[in-house]
Image (cartoon, rainbow, N blue to C red; front, side):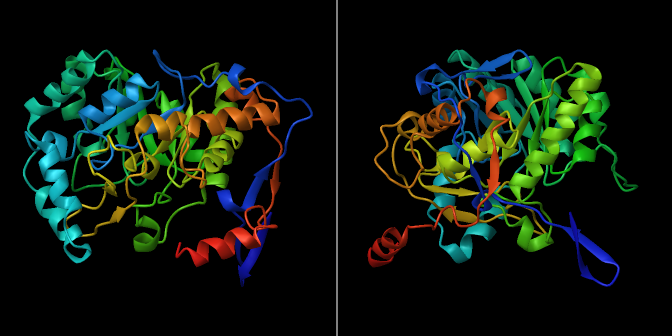
Length: 386
């Protein structure tokens, strides 16, 4: 339904995670017996969790830990890990900067060129540990780094930018051809980010093996404030899921969609899956892990931009190990730990035995879902200074 926002101008209502709730099913399932697997090309993950390609979240060590726990850490090939021989030392400089100096320091530290030999080295280090390796780059570097990554043994190549489309217009530089790139790569290509039915369909037709959904929802991303663009994640996910299903019925090819950003709790992740997502990409939750290189800090991928930074460094603190954040036992009551347990329990409660069944969960519009009857919780948190 569209609403008039002024003379001859309509706008449709869009929804975020805090505005909806999931309805329990008529049948329930043992949470220990639900199927949470996610397939991306030949890669099959035990849990549908990807760690964001942020330098404060994923380095080779973290990617290995994530892989051994059943998920997938995505390494940023445009970042610190491919510019410096000892990336953790550089990351700690950024983590230790004052808030006023952080963005400038990030810009300075990302100026040295990427060392192509480090791309192959990092990938081989991850593969040597016996886990899947996923790497990410911006469209401008995809063709150059894609061949290196593929030859080094990477399993998945992610081409990621603030907004991704098949039809891009430019005269000052060479345009990245998504369809041509997918044909030349012998490993699955995931692209993003997008938020609409039309563009999602066109990217699928170009041959991608997965789509990242979301523009600007991440805690460290400032694109919505700097550029004024974005669609709340519930609406974005539902629209792109509809594109996936229509494309699947028309072609027989199923292209998974991955909601990327804006999920701070297990409940948000459950809602993303219920809205049609096949998996989630998360940054802040994993930045809190002891294994994360940023040691409680992380920053947006567009923070280093020389002229128009669209990310910021934020402090989330260290709350536990990666295993606790994924599988528990949870030591916090805010939904930021035991994310897999939350997903399994929710799936069981709504009667879903698989991710596909979870995607058919009944959803209601419920802006009061997080505040109804919670007056004492609110008072206690204010009294504790939270």
